[in-house]
Length: 154
Length: 331
Image (tube, rainbow over the protein chains, first blue to last red):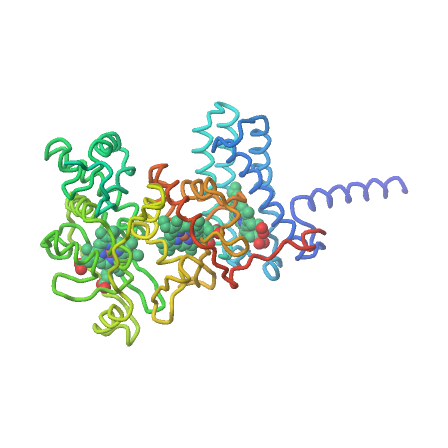
């Protein structure tokens, strides 16, 4: 009996854990989620900046390119989870249009993720600075396509 | 003719010299030989008429992109033809619709002469003597060099003519009165030719010409008074956005409210890609300007813009002070 209870509760805990994983825990405070996602976006910006330094020819060290591009891919992969309901007020530049048009938001996110993967691909396959610049430019446009409708202007 | 060392009257012609890729080597050569001073500059000596003509169109196309003639006079959203007009421009005085500037004789400018065109571009005057509203940035274009406006004219003539129906502006009273643009011009518009500054480099002068004239950057980046006029004193120090609650950034090199922390390379990179130095990306009209205008410039022209912007007097704009990073950054 005791063992059975233990089993059930273990399974239950596991299930809860798995369900709970993709979404930010409801218990997290909105202001912290906001800060977290802003940091994530800044991190993406920092990766972009490193790749840009190479594409511009300011830095010749290419050893971190794959890692930077992977960082962008990874960051965008969790971006969707960081905009749960209830995080639209406060110190955020996220517009309510995100929650009014969630499908559109997710779509621009997917497009941006694709561009990030393409950048990663170019870096892995060719490493040609010109091509990296082009892929980076395309990624930048895709970031803008989300910021335009879903993020407050400065 | 001893032209070497002689000061030019129209140095704008010189500023053009380092612009256009297709023409570059020739102009350099002639520039060195003749230093292109007289009004019969290198352009008239270069090759034959036909070649001159097609080069002129190419140069005109370059100016049309740099000056946003194409993006402002083409309603991409409604799929209107190139330069067919109809694009809405929202201001606090109402909504304006750009007119058709293809060579169509009725809805476009097919019946105009080069003189008519110059009057429109540099004086804000229609062939019938009507005054245009300053949404058409003739306030900046007024200092465009004669050679550039002629190239632009030839380019416009080379674009396929399209018949369209020009949309009426929806302007609020009293600005809707035909007297309004006229009074406005009497109060605020005066034609000032751009002076070549011999103390500065050619690159700086070229940058000034692109920023002040072709790119009409101050039309957005400078604050306006209640009548929509610009002031030289506060030029480029940022402005309230006409349509949303935001601000248009200060692009003087002020360290806390402007772009003092950007170096020239950062500016060139921004103009080419839209990326800000922190890896963020520009949006809205500026993204459009980067895409349709500045990313299509020659590298030299982007560097010239950067050199000029960095040389501006830093102006603090209290509404645009950046929040200093504070303890809230930590958890």
